[in-house]
Image (tube, rainbow, N blue to C red):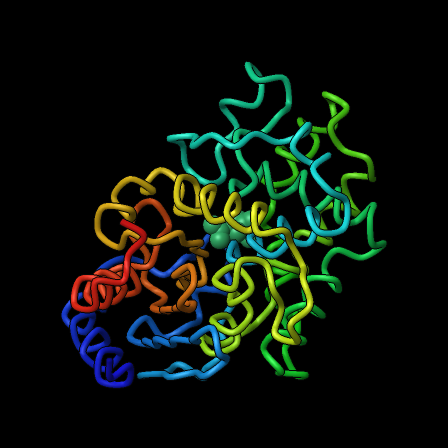
Length: 303
Ligand code: GLN
């Protein structure tokens, strides 16, 4: 297959919809991004990378970081995190509070804000610094030593983070946080506000395509845990649009309100698409269109 040509075609397929949707503005620092930006990168399991459009331009990774916090919490602390967070789709928006009360402070899944707050708390206990742990992982896997948290975005999230603070306090009221709410939230914002490109994220996601093996050949996760993370990504990674995403793209994926979507093609590679304008579920309109075009043309799907 001519990867470069297929990426180019998929990027062109996204062009007509790049004006559709809205850039996230509930975090004011994110609203400054050009909605017409678009990038697409493919990293194959042998570590080769191909790209189209703005594939080397850094953007705010936001909830894509939740994939890495979960992997690192499982790799460091084993299965115990699953006592504190579920593995079911929620059918609710990513920042919803409604299920937490009837479900006793146990978030439905690790990719909702509530679930990611719990996983961040676990990773903070295990490592002493969840934000830095995720950053160092992305630096190592992408080979980009400059990859870092954007302090202006983290500060903007904190200043407008009433919902996340409410979620964290509510979870704490059920005894499901080990660290002070303020520490958990600052670590959560630190990994959400990491800035990385499609290239960086595709390379960083490859461990899931390699069934748990890192770029240096060492093992982060068991084959079984890598498979399980992919399963939760498929069912929960794009929130209440996970069904539509599976229908159109057919791959495990994680979106973020910065407009990125990282998808895994087990055994083959990782694809990251980026377009800042979002649909109502908080997923990038352009990224979904490009991934849809790519997997439809290539037949790359888990189905
Ligand atoms: N940092 C964002 C928030 O907490 C992440 C949301 C997202 O990307 N879906 O609201």
